[in-house]
Amino acid sequence: MANADAALHIRSEGPIQWITIDNQNRLNAFTRDMWQALPSLLHAAETDPACRVVIITGAGEKAFSAGADISEFAGNRTGDAARAYDEINDAAYTALMACTKPTIAMVRGYCFGGACELAVCCDLRVVADDATFSVPSAKLSLGYNPRWIRPMLSVMSPAKAKEMLFTGRRYGAADALQMGLASIVVAVPALLTETVKLASEIAANAPLSIRAAKAAVDQLSTNPESADMAALEALAAACFSSDDYKEGQRAFLEKRKPVFKGN
Image (tube, rainbow, N blue to C red; front, top):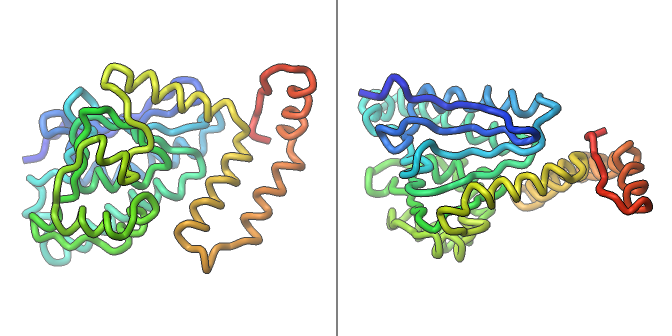
């Protein structure tokens, strides 16, 4: 039986919005309700003008998340229920990838299955040196939705994606860095400090510039033939007509740090 207290929690610290995966009795495994809650929490961050960066992490010290709560598989992973569960998963991943604000996964301990995919769907992954990644779908005879393989191919080679999916192997932090799963690897005691440092550095920069860059990289890396170049160019052009562009020039001339407001 799934833990009734399992939940996602959201909190703000200045320009940083934290989403914490909390189901510690099951290594922060995702219940169906938790997957369903994620899009609305991301929407809250998306529409909060004070939010500049979203960080997703796991509660406690043992896991980012062990993936889907296997105790729910009997009811959720057969027949029509399996297809409905896949759609809930996909809605969560899609909402994360569609977020126009930078997203960071702060990972320590276990990062398995659907949670590994969740981390992949973030823009950046700051990883503790005790982290372990795995997608064990082949060990459970689960079909891995092809829509979820596209984000994997944005961070690792096709050969590595095949190896990960074919073997269900566990990868340590050093392997994850070499594969592209990790953006940065740090010692456990430095994980929070380094993640907040990175998020704060991003948050201090011009939101319009970051939004334009994120949209361009995402579209050009995943849909190069069908990228909406007109829309991407419009986002870039909007930066030059913004108040923040004027502020950036003034700050440079006055030899001070700019204060960007996102307009």
